[in-house]
Length: 211
Image (cartoon, rainbow, N blue to C red; front, side, top):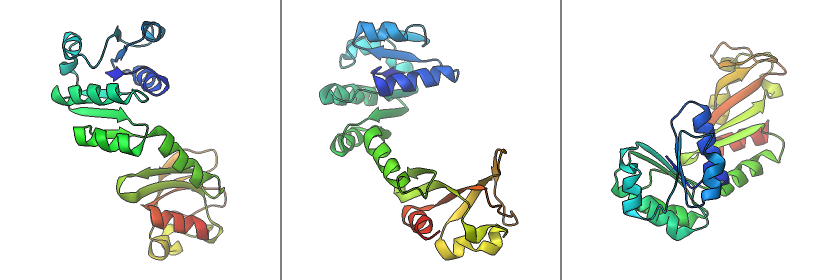
């Protein structure tokens, strides 16, 4: 179930449907709902802050819910609180600010998404040119995609000693024109290889700053 079919919610709904999931899309705007009618399994126009309306839609039977309501904070909070009351097992909700996100967490949302903040942090890490991609998880743990540093070329991962020197672990490697594969201690790094490196945010930032 995806509630709020704006840019964020609509993208999530279409992607889920494209991956074969049955998706109920709900929005208060009939025109928006009509736009998604052919793409989703089911669509509905509803006031998602109305408990009776939500019950009639069978919301309590869903295991996963995504709330894409952002700018209308009251609707976002009231809608998510209803989903918590319905004991939905897995609730994802968009927040437009860190304060909004904290409120959603206190209500009982399992996963809070801050698209603008997260994209801003990601871009900030990429503009230096050292990282090809950056993904941060909770507890300051991150994955980065980086071109193989010169100091590792022609050496095995074990010989390069990246974990001991930088506190990072190479978890995957991509050869030119090949798919990503798991990295092993005896993997030899080539000049044009791309590495996926994991570690704490501080460790991976320190690593990419030095190489």
